[in-house]
Image (cartoon, rainbow, N blue to C red; front, side):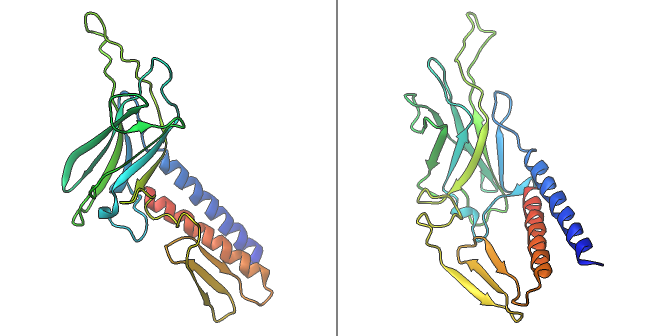
Amino acid sequence: MKVKSILASLGACAIAMSAMALSASAAITNANSGENYLFPIVADEGNNLPEGCKLSDVYGFEAKFDKVAGENENCVGAFCWQSDSNNWAQHEFCQEGGDKDVFIGSDGTVKWVSSEALFQDGDTWGKAFVAEWNWDKPDADPPVEDNQIDFSVVSFKLLDKDGNVLGAAPADGNETTTTTTKANGGTTTKAANGGKTATTGAKTGDAGVGVAVGLLGLAGAAAVVSRKKH
């Protein structure tokens, strides 16, 4: 097969796999008055636990919402989690000035960290949820309206015991890397914390091989994302 045909085939494969990964992420529900936002940490629905981390490394959560409560509006909900060792646990949050101990920031971000791990080492699965509390009682006499806003979750992160994003690179960006020289003259550089791996082509002047390797890496990365989401 000619190099052009190989490259075209690899490119199509990478694009198709990326599309599959994006469509898989859309299956996660968002918080509203009728259902919870689900974040499968280690579960049948998917695996979002960072490489090298354990369930017992999870101490908290951070979520960003698409809107915040305005004047005379409320936004009350809770971080919830489940696993083998825990049927259902929760910690509530609300808008600034409310009666909870965790508040949603003006940018729509809410963060909470426990003093203890939320899961145990023996747990084989774990899920997290964002629940919205709605105390409207339209059938009451007189009807009760709590002015709860309906929000969506834009992003969700797992936090370690220090409140940092689990599995993230150091905040100062000074991560340790290791470089390996290959037999063909290429090199592979990998972050010690499990970050991205960069590979350079062989010093042979064969640009086609370098591009093919890059496309293979892209297709492989898309496949990993797709697999984690299912």
